Amino acid sequence: MYQQLRFFVIGLLTTTLIVFSGCNTTQKKPDIGIPEVPEITSREDVVEDLSGYKVPTSYDITKYIYQSGAPYILSLSNRPEKAGEYITQRDKVLNLGVYAADLCYATTYMMKQGTMNYLEASKILIDDLGISTTFNTTYADRIEANIDNRDSLIAVVTESFDDTWNYLVENQQDVLARLVVCGSWIEGVYITANMAQKAIDNTAILEALARQKKSLNELVTLLETVMDLEEVSDLYKGLSDIQEFYEEVGDTLTDEQLQLLTEKINVLRESIV
Image 1 (cartoon, helix red, strand yellow):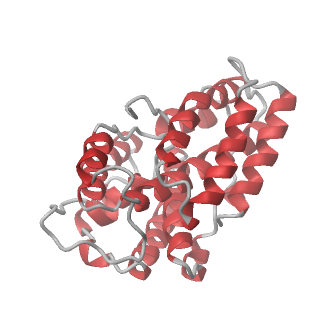
Image 2: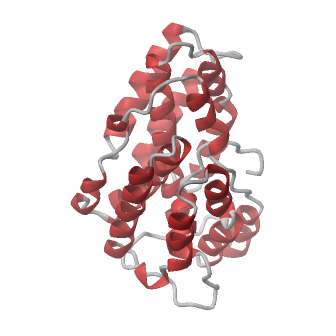
């Protein structure tokens, strides 16, 4: 069902790098206080459905920002030092996804310190969530070793996408997976829309944003089975509102549509960070 989602599912990016890579499903599940999916369908059906989901790379979209000539704007990303301020399990998981998108943004622009800052912010959240026992230093070390080579860094980041998703699903962390995806998608669109406002030539960015109509439809579908959970309901409503906006979007965004999308995504993003 979800194999065509081709945008900012980047939350798994960070969890791949520093949490779940190298783990097998025989390990004890992390106790992070996130509820499981309601028994609307059997666990086997959920696993079978979500196991077909292919986690894409986010660099396909951030490259348009970079190639447009827009400068890197540090203030658009969530501040790394806020990682220790999140209290609830929901906020920690969502911002793990947010920081993953920020990591991708920094990496695309080869911001070395930013890359390391967002890796560290992610580790803080992982420790707070009580899942740091699965931390695999190999990936962090490889990121440091490849910090000067964008292509190699992207290769390291994308290597364990499928393994990460499968780990979360098979360990019955379905809501966790969805929340991380939401945080990443929202932060990615937030950065892209705000960059489009500032780019000298934003044509490619507007077209890239318009193509997110399909990815948003897939994301909303991904949330439907858990939309009544307290941790998900507000996100589902906010994303559904943006989905309704996208019904009027064609092959590219107009200036008026860009302004409206920016306003909507800013409000939703603020509710997370």
